[in-house]
Length: 416
Image (cartoon, rainbow, N blue to C red; front, side):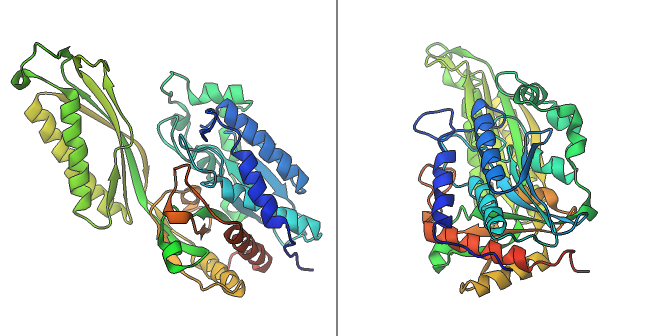
């Protein structure tokens, strides 16, 4: 027996995406940070949809919602399908959320047809992919991959709230995080559907694409300390202006990264203190997100940036402190899963097209643990992390059709 889509399946998926976007901290915007009250409400709604689709649901120790759809035989391997439900501030509706809700729709279709596969499916809704609230990211997927460490829970947000404290308030036991890990031999693989977050598929007129690799990424938190002073009484040549120094550092990032076509660097957050219009900034804190296809390229750029920042600090008489808050070497997607996905794309009547991902994803956590593959879905204008993020129902249906075919064609164990 083969499970097939029915009219209304894609519309139901799109409707759920709209409903999930209502769980936000800011009316009129979508802002849903990890372990916030909005995350809790969204997790509860996702759990309800999982149960309605025929899954047994649990919340793991780091607040990942897991829905399990058993295989035809006990003891079979598990195929993980999912993404994240946390967002950036003032986000779009589809980043992460699409991959979770499409996974639920897929199981819903299988369950409606009474189809059990030769492996179990677990749909996972991670909560810490964006890394907005606390330093670091990917805690949810790292826990299941077995790579989460205790010190990743020993950090505090801007309000002084620790991850462990917030997990307890969420109803989780952070000390039990090792229990979330799944053994590699128990896994068939990890699949993630995600909007492209770029314009390539739209330019090629394709609804979906097959991801080949995910870029290497580092994140840093920098603090420049100068000397606060009166804006009207300290001569320009005698100032130790932390913000002016930071501005020079930001421009160094732009200059160095622009010199290499494969390199991107972003300062997305900056704060000047004391923050008064008539006071020279005495301290500035800012972030750096650095990405490249290969870790060697990324690290070479960082060495050049660090040298430029150090020189700026010395010349301007300010102090520089930098902490690396996140590092991932990137990963290549699984060849056998990419090949299987390509077959499903072709059978859907779509020209297979492979492309890399410059953005980080939960799939990165499973590098070296189990095979991982990603299906990108075309997004309008390539816009993401923005309320203008947009996909069509037709493209969502194409992705659901490809994934439904894919899971029904996979073997019970990875090929040797």
